[in-house]
Amino acid sequence: MNFDLKTLELPAAATEKCDLLVVLVPEGFKPGQDALSVLVAHALKSGDLESKAGKHLHLYLAPAVSARR
Image: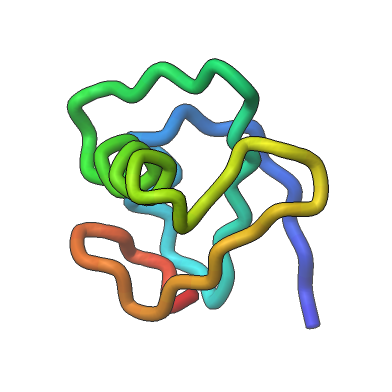
């Protein structure tokens, strides 16, 4: 299994072709207009995701995101 650590802005991360994309969301996250920012903002607003250490949300085949998971 190969792992690559990359520092990407969310619009670029959404287009990254990979099996798994891990996105770290800081407290005070300010979303942009890109698909991944909107997805994270909706998850935070609905309470499905918290921007705290140890909190996570699994997504599979998210719309407008190239990663499978």
